[in-house]
Amino acid sequence: MNRRDDVEPGAPLRRWAARAALLFAVVAAALPVLFAGVLGALGLLVVGTGGVVVTVAALYWFLTRRGVLRVVALAVAVLAPVVVVVFFVRAHLLWVVVLTCAAVFLALVCARAALGGGAPPSSEYSSAPPQRPFLIMNPHSGGGKVEKFDLRRRAEELGADVVLLEGSAPVDVAAVARRAVARGADLLGVAGGDGTQALVAGVAAEHQVPFLVISAGTRNHFALDLGLDRGDPVACLDALRDGVEIRVDLGRVNGLPFVNNASFGVYAEIVRSPAYRDDKTATVLRLLPDLLAGHTGARLVARIGGTVVDGPQAILVSNNPYGTGDPAGLSRRDRLDRGVLGAVTVSVANTRDAVGLLRRTNSRGLTQRTATVIEVESDAPRIPVGVDGESLLLQTPVRCVVEAGSLRVRVPRTRPGIRSAAPVLDWVRLRELARRPERNAPPGS
Image (cartoon, rainbow, N blue to C red; front, side):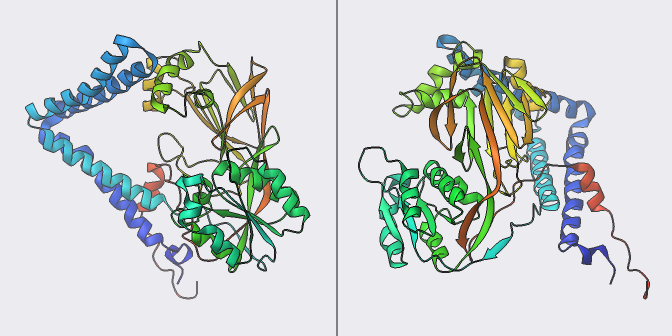
């Protein structure tokens, strides 16, 4: 059998998904014309698009203004969609809009199913179970998951030496991990947030000992991108008795390790504020107007490979790029071993730029690149940087690099696995996938 279906497993399913996506796209385009006429369909498009643009512009004004203007902007942002719906109802075309939106939704679902598949999984390596594992556990992380899941007792029953980060005084977890390696630990692990994971991962990479991630933090982004069970940290301990190793990259910012990302600009400035932990919403609304207008905060310049971005309000540098299928481009990472950093910059100076981001016509407003070295320069000698959720003040220029394959991660042999990031919608590729396969070749060919 010489069909292309045999060469690529799942090809028939993806082909039919591509055909369904194109069919639903045609239905979505045809419905307004069939039931509202050409002029009516054009009116629906203008009113719907206008409502979205007004809403986005009003939300931008809400974030960048204070006092009465902020209240008015919020009112407009709320009322604009209501006015659009009332218009559709009065024109007796709401049902057409609903059916059209349903067809668009189905087209997107089928398109992503056809274009999905993602990157192949990282290579796994068999290795003997550790004899002297050393684990650091933060009992305060993740709302007390260490105690809730009885992680200390379970780990000790598996032969691990466990240290709890108790008390209010700060602990140098990297120093604790280095002392453990000096005493003969052959695996380092952390049950805690991604910031603590990164510090100990840096020590594990330096000494080339395996690293164990236990999903006992709040969000556990690193665990998610490793394919671990974020909801069951106990399952992560299975790696101590029946595990495999994978090699992943480690990011460094001015020499400090990070497993997820380093953020610059608006977010880093807000998190740096002492008031942020007590009242996040009020602090964001108070600081955003001046930060977005450039009245406060350092001016930044990002050098991403051969690309220079001057004056962005926000920069996100990630250990391997995030998926780009969603508008923000920050879904998840389906690979952690590409050997590159991902970079996303946002530059929004006015309402027009904000609307341009929505239409993806403001190429300067949103840039997405990859590079092995990224530098962030500033007119300030030191700038705030959010490193895996921890707020730091670093000397400029800030240099981010990737250490390809430097981290050995031990994971359970049986685990949920990595769900691929949403693919970029490529309608040309969909049309190619939807074509009929070649017929069977004659026998003996």
